[in-house]
Length: 236
Ligand SMILES: [Ca+2]
Ligand SMILES: [Ca+2]
Ligand SMILES: [Ca+2]
Image (cartoon, rainbow, N blue to C red):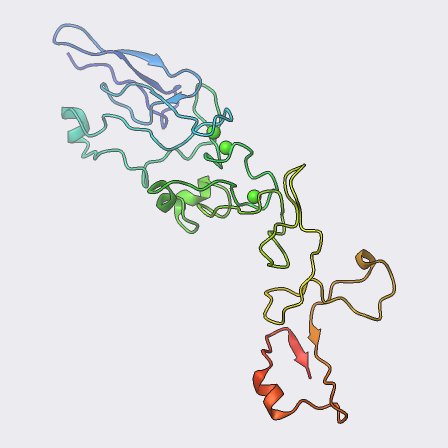
């Protein structure tokens, strides 16, 4: 007697797993997977898998799942190979029985500043799976396995001084978001000196203009060689 096949997630029935194994005389019993568990394969061997929640925020990890899709005569005749975290991850928003997948499975605050970067590091080798650009990374926050070192600062330390411009309430924040360095990666702080409004009323420059102090108002050859111009400097 062929055993009953418990439906997987691709079926039009709610996914179910084996709760009583089949024997020579008894059929398999299937039970629909409850909230927070899945069965991603239709077969007569795989049970529902209770999904982990690594950061304890109530949202489920896609990582950790496994099943018996490579075992048994039927699975082998279908040329199934072992579950692959890269090829076979559940791409739905959540299991049939309830629950939702976590786009930042190691960040309980789930990208608090909304910049698409999760706050905590994704451990190896899971970080390789969700590296930005991989298909699986689309199931993750926008910037994949990147870690947000300024999780409360959506501009991620705009003046690049190593101090997050915004921090968690009660933690020190960068009071002086100003750049004094020509090698800076941004133009934050290079405000127009003729602007008389409060600092936050003066527009942020989009280019930098260098003014030589020499009487002829020209940069000498040595200055031109030493000065580190970048693409935002249009006029000398
Ligand atoms: Ca979670
Ligand atoms: Ca999370
Ligand atoms: Ca973030």
